[in-house]
Length: 63
Image (tube, rainbow, N blue to C red; front, side, top):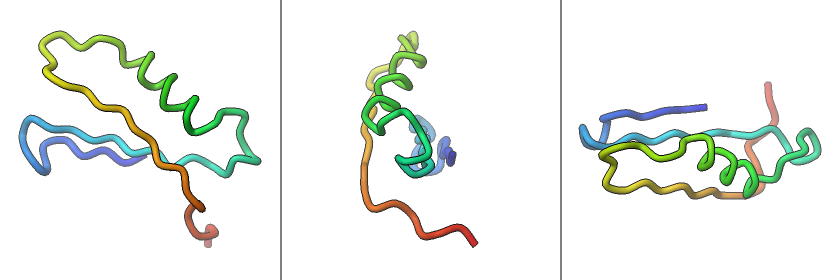
């Protein structure tokens, strides 16, 4: 997990997760995004909130 709070602008935050390979988990990337959205819930005073996911070939092998 990587997080960036206030780096690009003081009113922005970003959280990035890198999941283990799909053969090592029961949750799809899409389902993980939906569950994360549900867990965050409603944040009082928030003007906008975006959840998106990217699925790709994965990262390189661990060293």
